[in-house]
Amino acid sequence: MASPARIRHGTSSGTTPAGPAPGTLVPLGNWVLGTDTSGKAYLFIEGSTTRLGGTANAENLVNYWDFGTRDLTTMAANLGRVMSLPQFKDLTPTQESALMQAVDVGAIAQGRQYFATPRSQKPGQTIRSQGQLPSGSSAVYSPIIPGSNVFSSIANAIIGPFDALASFLGMIGWIFHPIFWLRAVEFLTGLALMFYGLSHITGAMRRSSATHRTSVRSIFGDLFKKSPAGFAASSYVQRRRGRRQGRLDRSYQESRKAARNAPE
Image 1 (cartoon, one colour):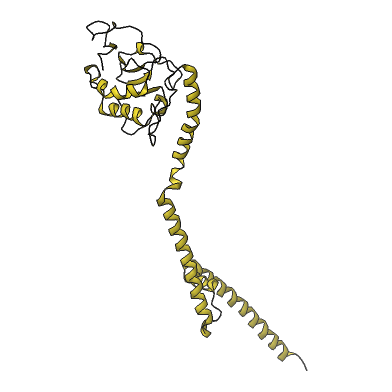
Image 2: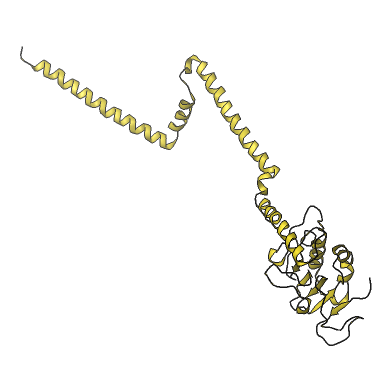
């Protein structure tokens, strides 16, 4: 590739490679790579709309490179060499990886015209407000991107619903994870085996002459009686029965006594 068509360093003073002087406007529709004062890196089409509603303009950057082309494939083929230039030596490895990912399978490959990555971004993080998208299964190069603003708007309208669908599937993806289904099957299988075993136990006990009245209810009743709460309830019932039996005995004895003392 020839020398950079347009490039600007930290100030408008100083020397630049062969090409238009600093401050020369970048033609609308050309791909641009640049950085601002904070070290954030940008890759966008000149004049495109940012995710926050602004206009992407190379003249607002401290340092930029005009690829001199509207073709996505050509820009992608030269991105690595451009990032290795001295004026982009402050790019972090994470930023370089994010830019390459955006072109290969990320936001730019999926039709976006604007992408930015701050210096503090963590590896693997996706910041949608910066025009970023999760990696796609394969690069999607649309023949109408880049192009005129009319065609770009149509393309973004088509891609938008798929972006929302991808976000929704990412939220509910855990439902389709094999481990989730494995745990559900384990739980249901264990529950079925437990009730199957209880059924066989009660059936065997029911067939026994010594425990012909035994059932699942009686099994759990016996277990409850052995617990502290069951022991207290059983003691209370026995005391009530004892008091009732005592009243009946006393009433019976008084009746017998009155019958013996009655005159003949």
